[in-house]
Image 1 (cartoon, helix red, strand yellow):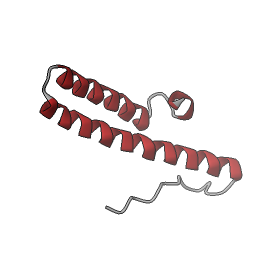
Image 2 (cartoon, helix red, strand yellow; image 1 turned 120 degrees about the vertical axis):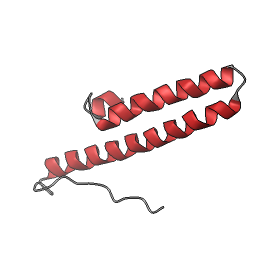
Image 3 (cartoon, one colour; image 1 turned 90 degrees about the vertical axis):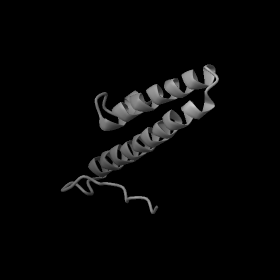
Image 4 (tube, helix red, strand yellow; image 1 turned 60 degrees about the horizontal axis):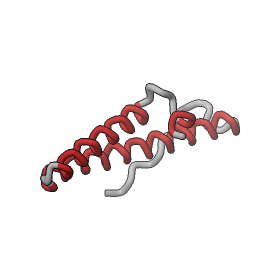
Length: 83
């Protein structure tokens, strides 16, 4: 599904790959009975998935803008989340 929505070499696709690798690392640590070693990779995966979500949102907003004729002069970017 993601591959149809995002270009193959986009930052979002690279982030999705990083998320997958981080979760594999976490699973390996859990499989070795080291749950404390899984925490870091799980956090890295969550950060990467947030990047994926932001990238997808930007991609969809840009596609909508091109299709509707609005915002043609600039790329739309989502507002930064309040932290």
